[in-house]
Image 1 (cartoon, rainbow, N blue to C red):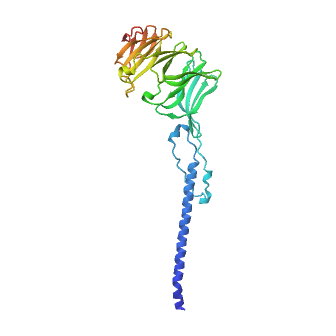
Image 2: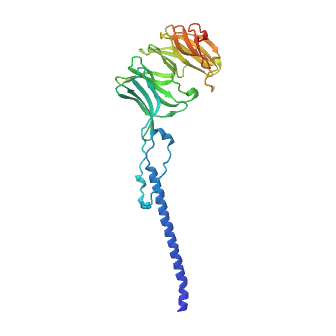
Length: 341
């Protein structure tokens, strides 16, 4: 009897060993399930966090999950359904890109960037501040097009009679590809009464309306000259720059188109070296263009003081500004520059 007990003891020991192993496996298995369920629960909680507003769309970060309380029933892996995790919802809270009030303070034009349903858009709206009426003029995707950057619709000019808004698309790029406040493409005229839009010009590096709003002076894209467009007929007069890049050996940039008070002449500057990394040019020429006479002449030759026209304040007096921001007087007939009194 003793011998039989001794023979069966190893079997009992092995059965005890396997029993302990199975218990360990079950513990590990149950722990893994609990760990997996907890991780899936955290993922579910993060997916259900409220959507981030448009103003922070580019800075969106994962929300910090809240741990379940000790009274929350423990979930198993089969309790979590990944297909039920809701998609984040973005609120269309706008970023104001540009805002422009009409001279009579009756209208406000505003360009907004809005993030809606996973897409960033540019929206141009005009609001009547007296009546509260709102026109949505443009609503388009906010898309980058290198090297100019992003093109977006912006208000450009209010008509003097208060019935129209001219708007265009402007680039956000830097340096030579940047969008100054007088640059744009696809210039349109919007009727504030009927809500209708019409094409005016393909645009250019610089645009300027004459004081009587009968002409538009344009430095077109891809052409070395200035166009004067008669707005009623749509006809153009073209003037080639008297100074060319080939003449000076470096990049030139025309600008600061300044109309005379009687809307018959334009004074502008040709800047050399303006794209070389500095804000101002190395030297400038100031040119006068007479619309009806279809003529041009250089008033200031290759000057290193950086003069640019600012405003044509009187028939015989033009304000010009130098590199240091000081204002001077220039005679628009002779080009003589004198210190402002």
